[in-house]
Image (spheres, rainbow, N blue to C red):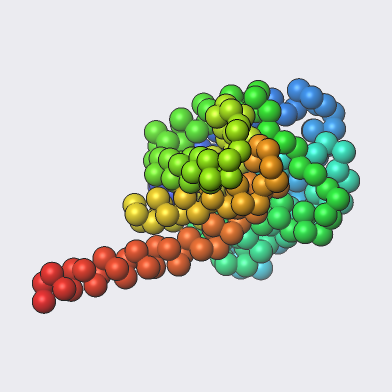
Amino acid sequence: MIGIDHLSPRSVGGVTIAQCVALIAPLAVVATADPERFALNLVAALVAALVWEGIFATLRRRVLSFHGVTTAFIVAVVLPPEIAIWQIVFAVSLGVILGELVFGGRGFGFVQPAAVALSLLLISFPELQLRQSTTALAVATVPGAVLLLLMGLISWRVLVGAIIASAVLLALRGAEMEPVTVATAMAFALVFLVCDPISAAATPIGRWIYGALAGGLVIVFSPPGAPTAEAMVFAALMSGVFAPLIDHVVILIHARREMRRHA
């Protein structure tokens, strides 16, 4: 049985539930394009995630968790509808195992499992193109983003840092793009991949740096034109890798300043 404390907003279980609720609208928008195929892809992703959750829970003699559901939801939104089922199972399995379970479960890793799954899929199958964000998907992301912001599960500093950095790099490139176009392309991945509360930086200053790094990498990885879903995935993965280092440096600098002040 799961205790009430395990479902509090700040707990790992609470984060999982909140993210699932926030993902309902994006899932519904994507499902309208091809309901049957989307349902098949979603079931494949869910089964792959939960099977591995069950295997690791059995091996470690722990209670089965359902944290892989959010990974399956995010992957199902971003994957193209024509992808093979075995490719979905491959990607979700690697994402859940390498991004979460090998570290001891959700909350112990340092990279976003869905970003791991999608990046490994793109590396393994370079010809594959992810579903690009649409206006409808971007609009559907907003209620979930507001919910997660109000619950303190994503940081406004990361959001603002990413937006500022991407805008600056676009200006330096001389690219003339409508802000709405850029926001539409970045909205979903920015909220659910870059701003993930577990893989993002934890210190206030670190969140600014982390968000700026992610926003800058999106533009660097994108071809001329609007940011792509592929660029968002790799930017989320790379910034997540550097998040612990960013926090460590920020804490180290703060500690040295305190030592000098009290010396």
